[in-house]
Length: 181
Image (cartoon, rainbow, N blue to C red; front, top):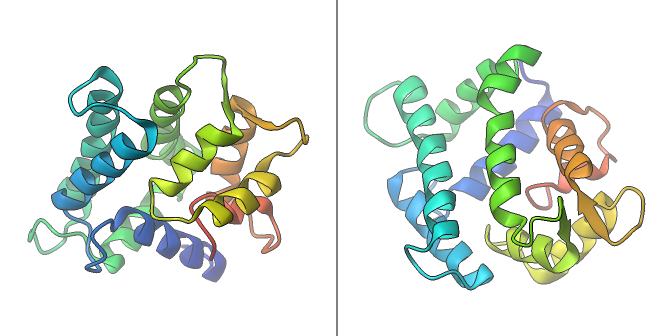
């Protein structure tokens, strides 16, 4: 069972994935997200980062579509998305199996210089890739940079991603991970 605050955060994440803004998640959204990230990061369509990034999002899409598209219309509604996350967040094991692999894959793709952290500029590109503004990205980065060192370490990213899903404190910086609620 999701709490009201979790539902609010998961609904925000749904909007994050609904790149075309038509209130469903579909294959076109995964393509639109891929295009935005190519633009933000300066990747060429078809290069290694682009391929890895798109493969990660196709995997997310298949998991949502295959298991939680209740009416088999190849569109994932907000209700179906919330049902998926009720399952994915039902236990630590389920989280580690279904949710955590996403951030592991994305972290390594976004960490373009392979130093084990995201710079502020890298985070801003990540955030803007999901239709957030640069000013929103600045605010989120400041909140998420737990130790104030000007970068987001792998540990900080993983912890905030985890906390986004489970933390019940409405003032937690992790609430900003996918955008302003």
